[in-house]
Length: 167
Image (cartoon, rainbow, N blue to C red; front, side):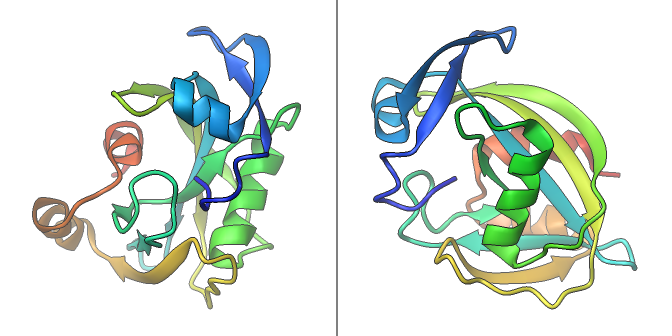
């Protein structure tokens, strides 16, 4: 969901029903905890494993945490699916994915307020980390994921929104 220094990006501010009520810079959105749109893309291998990745220490939110999916903030005026594809390309270098809608959700904590859409794709790699947002990634079975969730810090929004959609 962004590298420190990306604060000049403009994002749509939305209400609880996902209606655009204004715009703000990413920095202002973070500082004031404004509700915004974000995307999540779960990457599964052809064997059904889930790709998990560890976020860079340079991330502006939850640095160094593990994540269940690629994704991030939707830009002002940007449509949902192109935003999901952009994030998948930026974070993992995947540009040829077929996206399957998995669901929607909302998340709020003391740091963030989001309205989200979730997709899934099947891709065995290779993956490239060219934007400094991801430092490592690996496929895990659902059983291994449960162990990793118990042992490592995971990004709470994808944990809350995406984890219930995994089967």
